[in-house]
Amino acid sequence: MLVSICITVVICAAMILSILFFPRVRIGKRTFDAYPLIVLFGAAMMLILGQVSPRTVLSAFIADSAVNPLKILVLFISMTVLSVFLDAVGFFFYVANVVLHKFGTSQKKLFLTLYITVSILTVFTSNDIIILTFTPFICYFCKNARIAPLPYLIAEFVAANTWSMALMIGNPTNIYLSGSASIDFVEYFSVMWLPTLFCGIASFLTLFLLFRKDLSKEMAKDMSRSHVFMNKPLLVIGLLHLGICTVLLAFGGYLGWEMWLISLIAVISLMICALTVCFIQKKEPAALHTCLLRAPWSLVPFMLGMFVIVLALSEQGVTSALCELLSRGSPILCYGIVSTLLDNVMNNIPMSVLMGSVVSEAGSLGAIYATVIGSNLGALLTPIGALAGIMWGSMLKAQGISMRYVDFLRYGLIVLIPSLSAALLGLALIL
Image (cartoon, rainbow, N blue to C red; front, side, top):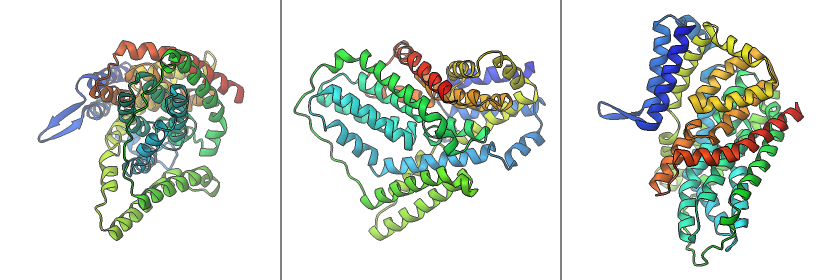
């Protein structure tokens, strides 16, 4: 047990350091993300030192179950590609452009509308995609309007990491944790709508009170408007595929259709339709090329490596010991707080892989959904909590906006405490 724990601690520490200080490494003429390579090294060490057998790993990868990591990866990457396609054809930029120019000089109306828009888009797409799309536009808009960008940037980040809890597809951690407990799309939403609503209201009120002085100032009236180029046929195709896929994910379980297969077929259909349109228009399929480039391929070795590490921890009895420790208190409170804190020690995806094994042993619905809440809200505390936090900080730095670690922590604590409390209260009421 001690060997597996030591390997896990060292790998998690090295992974966090790599994310913060050396995110990319050069091998030959190519550069790669460093953190998946570190995790793969940790997985190899677990196998070499006999902490988990190759037979156990192979059995887990070919198992016909919802917790199969390959199925979970297909579902996550497929849903991300559907979201990235809409971004590539200009949908999110167009929405941001319309919303941010609609309310004249009223910052309060703008703040509310931005929060609602980001929240709605996050529910049906991906929180990471929304953050990466809206952040540069908010920076540009605020500079043009001569207003402080921080209230809007923090509101965007909080909304994206709060309302991502509502549906399974909002965050890869939702997909993994619900899959590990064999929870389907409808069952997930039937529980998580209330905690998400409570959390969303609490986070908005906290943000509004926090930035009320900044929002009382008027904006400049002579703002220029960005022109957005959109390929309308591709936009319609993208929206139809995302909408139909979401509906089938919700009701496919009643027909015995697996979610990973639904999402994969949706992506294949999207590519065929998009290629056909581009052929008819005699244009290069640039949107599809963007999808393939921006799909989170680095998460494949990362999640597979983490899965092997967690299998080793399970084989050595670590997950059972952690399950027993957390079972001494309220499942909702213990798992909600611990998962939130673990997010900021080892990042939310490895935390979810680890806690997915723990909650499976616990067999408590409260523990499962509380961990889902922690995996989303943990991103609010420090940049380490989620990869989106790291990318968000890098984007702000590129835009010349200062967001120190201590500033992130200060704003994060102010928003996290009421948001997490409200979410766990909503969960306790609905279960």
